[in-house]
Image (cartoon, rainbow, N blue to C red):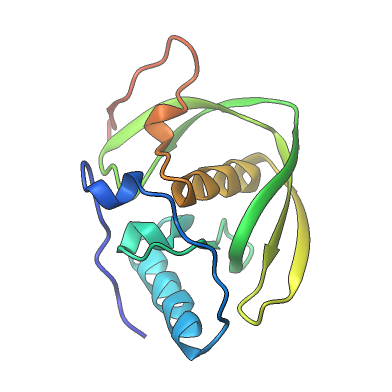
Length: 155
């Protein structure tokens, strides 16, 4: 396992749409393992492969209750609303209030290609939406709630 460099700010790869994963092999497993190590080192809650320079629809999430690996994730539905400040490892030091569903239902494959359905809420729902947006070339700064602006985090 290795720590990978996180792409930041105006890196053009962050605006690109990731490709669907068709091969579930050791190379994918290595990417997932490296992404998790990178996520832990950076003390984040979610990381998409594009953030480490790999244009594949791959996401890792750990909001405190264990690792979830999402390959080819898609939002099926969303309910409710939450308006909360978000940050991003690719936009270090910045935060903005976004409008996201409170509950989301997604489908995704695991590292071996098996499909799963997840219904999550609150922080995990926000994180899933944030990371799935990354796979579509969308940064959270493009999802700010009406009237909100991106600002520097006050430590």
